[in-house]
Length: 160
Image (cartoon, rainbow, N blue to C red; front, top):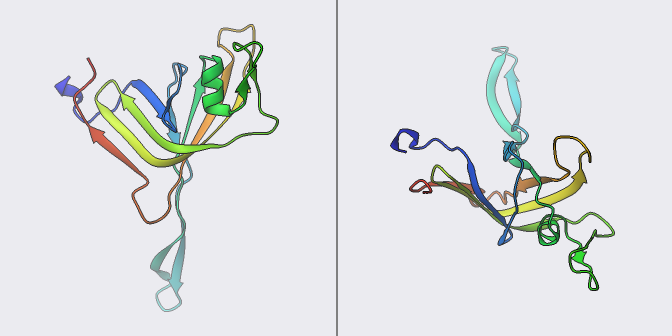
């Protein structure tokens, strides 16, 4: 796949807090977030911008729909626990849970995206009875301490 050198396509595996996340809907992982905000300083003499100052750093937020709602997958993205008497039964947590840890996203085209620290939250959403499966809608925010690189992209050989 030399023609795809550097082009990132097709999710192979997603790991958060050292736990592999299950099957994700065909839309994949959507990488968005907020743009940085700036203050523009305008001089009276020139009536133009003489300085642009960062007011608020942007954010990197990934969203995806976990469609493989097995007990361990639900625990991995939303917390809760397996029922002791019926281990195939997931017990949702009493209040929303945020899971923190490193992220590793591997692609079929051979890239690896890594973040040292992310914050993951999820909620069950969807319709039962339509064409799309019920899912755990997940949001991952890359945590930026302002001192180290928040994430990296490594180009490796494409997956077989």
